[in-house]
Length: 395
Image (cartoon, rainbow, N blue to C red; front, side, top):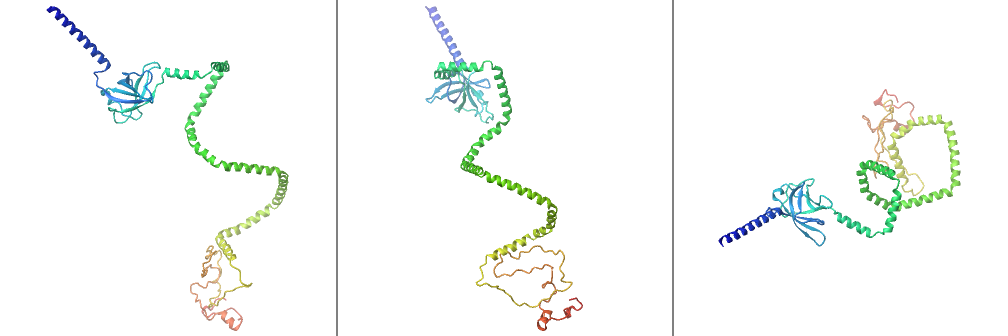
């Protein structure tokens, strides 16, 4: 009996050890004894072949697994990931997530894609990531194809395919050449795609501008139609006008051709005059402007001429050769407040070096013994004028 009890106990212990080994092996296979860090992924859908314990890889290396899948009512899927803490520090916080599979029929896994500009922070526990892309399964393709085929009439589809087969029959070489030409065209078009994209971007603004100007454009087209109709209605008068213009041109050619040399000489002679008028254009404009202002003055009460005169003290007369006018005297044009002279003002005296200057240096201004007074008192005096202060000077 004692040996039987020992054998039974030994067998029980053996079974327990074998069960423990199997449990540990299963736990190791499932990663139950591996420390993990939770991360959540929100995906538009999980896919048809996405199961718990699916791999989470980055650059082809497994860095975690899918702990569980939680579907939502709106069709989205919440993937709870169990990440390996030893690899998390190598994964940036802004990592991209794709749900993909090695083949169209294979089981899906979570692929972590490094971004173009990785962040300095690493992936941390409890972080929520958004899935960027979910691979389309062949089942989905078949499902969509079936839904399309259900809406097609087999007879019409057969006729369409037969027509396409007949159209393509014997034209393989031409179709190949067309595809080759299309490839060459696209290769030439590719460098212009940025400019085309810019044109498409600014096209709405241009279209809006044309839309705003559409009424004016339509009105212009209507006016052009009216003008063209008027030309058609008056074509006889237009023909007569053109014939008259041709005759006038012929006569003008004869006149100008015959008098070409005299006309050229006249133009050459007018050059100094036009240069002078151009030099004094400011004074001429001021003078004409003053006449324009004067023309708007109120008329006189009675037809007459009003003269405002006064008596001034005598000034030195013209003396030779001191007061001889200078050749090519300078000074430029003078407007002297024209064209609008202020009220109760006097135009300034312009010293032009072209004659007697009553304000020149040394002129006594007021003279009591001058020829004008003598002639006023005694009448004309024979001989040149005399002045004791200028004895010896010619009169």
